Length: 198
Image 1: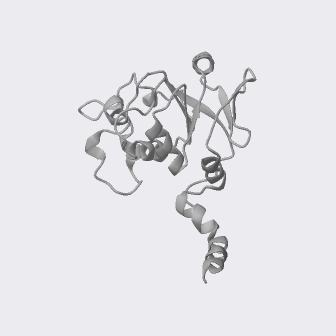
Image 2: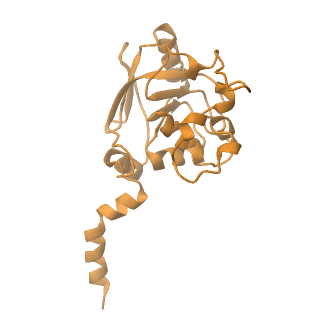
Image 3: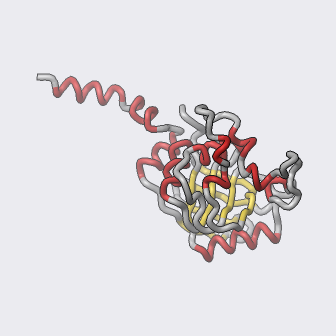
């Protein structure tokens, strides 16, 4: 299994109402030398999280203990910039399993889905409602239901649907990457191949 199965996630959320967060901000280029998906969480938003002397920046949301959870709520155009898959690795390694925004860069969205992070695109109006709810109460929980393709603010019951590619949805609910998907069809592939042999 490539990653944990994703069905229904109920969690508090970390709000980051910043637009145009690009992949160099998510994981600075100097940390891209590693080839494994390990350790990137330590450097997630490195330049925003820490001062030059390594001390935490007190005004950055990831350093604020009142915000926690497996859901990151970002502003419009999250994941823009270069196509580095390490940005998705860093978000996953930090512990987030879902990112919510009103718009995602296509390449980031694909990279996230490939490793088990669900990018949930909502309307700007609903995104504002999420930010408002979290600001009013940091313990506000969101329910992300992948089978039903809905996201709900549990405190208010407000809900919105989101879109996802059917193949990616199947893979996420089973914890598959592309290789796992093919492995799961191994016997069918063998049968089909045998029928093709003349």
